[in-house]
Length: 375
View 1 (tube, rainbow, N blue to C red):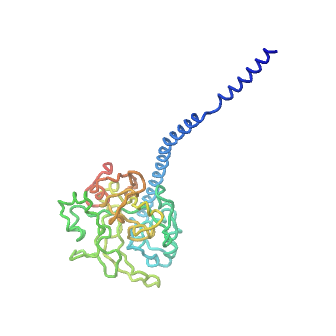
View 2 (cartoon, rainbow, N blue to C red):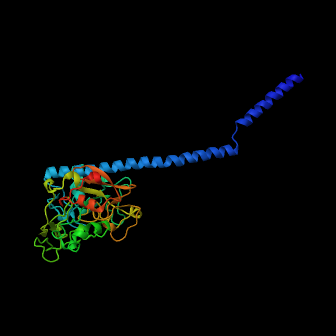
View 3 (cartoon, rainbow, N blue to C red):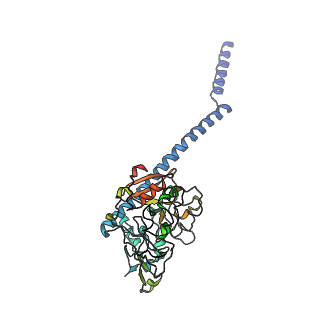
């Protein structure tokens, strides 16, 4: 009897001991939590990097679609789209019989002109400026930066990409405008490297943002010219309608005398060596708001919204820039921004790219051929 009782007690105590041994102590629990925390900390950057890689690939493919649309535009129209005429043009001034003009007469942006070749013909044929500007084009937004976003002040849908305009390179400064005559050719490379060639006249083709009847390009180059030709594949339109005169069906038209839209044969430096498009810089603090460089959106004309300057240092959106910020290329991608070449190839370029090289590659006919493999 006593032996049986001892066996029972032993069994009971054994179960109790086994049960106690299977439970976690507080120290063990804290160790497990710490290990999980370390694993999450190690995995999170990898997950974020994978997501950013996917977003960057999407962005690159979107730019490729834009360049292919430009090729289709050139095939159908025999030239690339123009960059439009001036800031905030009205589609009512650049249409007839309810149909929008194409280049060289269209005053709205290159992004508007390629819509029929992006399966967006219905948007391209909208009748009013309000209808056009308040219609989103999802392809025009980089997923690393923001979803399709409206300017909260005027409901216009914004834009994350721009045509890259090359400033005149050494040897062109006398031919292409008074603004560059003050820069001796020998000083050009160093001034470019120092950021001194980042002035907005190079994008505007002079000092005139908004135009007026009588503004012309004077081939004699006498005096201070209102306008001179810019050097990117996307050129400023020469067909100027006095604002709002098209509303009543009697547009007042002026010819600015600028060169016509670019044809493939005009890209004498080679399509694989000439940049057409780039991502544009938008300060991180303004991704969901607006600024002078990001307020009129994809349907704007010759303006900061759809144009950037290659002689300026490209930067990441987190960089705070003053003064020249409206004309900078850049992106939300770490370390790089994406550019599109005239042959529809794409390339990621470091922010510390040599500016003289970048500017030459955005200049389609300066005779300074730079292999994109060196970027």
